[in-house]
Amino acid sequence: MPFWGTFGNTFEFLEPGGPDHLLPGRPLEQSVRIVPPTGTPAGAGFFVVLRGFEGAFVSPDGRFLRERPFGQFRVRVGVVSGALVCRVRLTDINMDDAVFIRVHAFAAFIT
Image 1 (cartoon, rainbow, N blue to C red):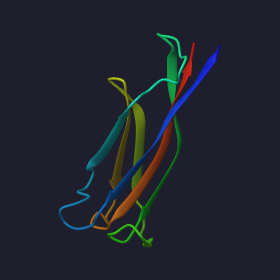
Image 2: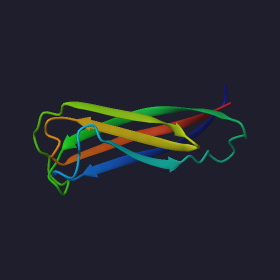
Image 3: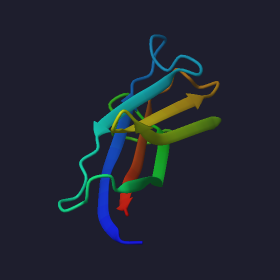
Image 4: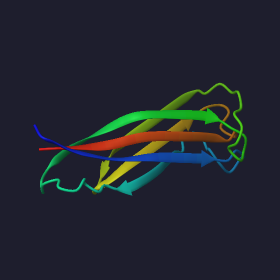
């Protein structure tokens, strides 16, 4: 099974705290169009890998960590209409605190 390379992206979410942000269960989403590596044949397949993620409660400007119980945290990475899509969701009693979430993902191309 020949391997043709990868297309990766890092998604970053910085959501400020306050009553108008981080509503319970509110999903956040970002996407980027997938660009196959040079030389990848037409019709090559690929699979998506979640390489890692991190999440932290932070100060409203994102510069300093805040200690809070994190509660539930969900990360989903997949492909929708030719784009690498990342969806995150944070559910916690501290939903009015600012949060920073970083997700690393890539698509690996094979034939």
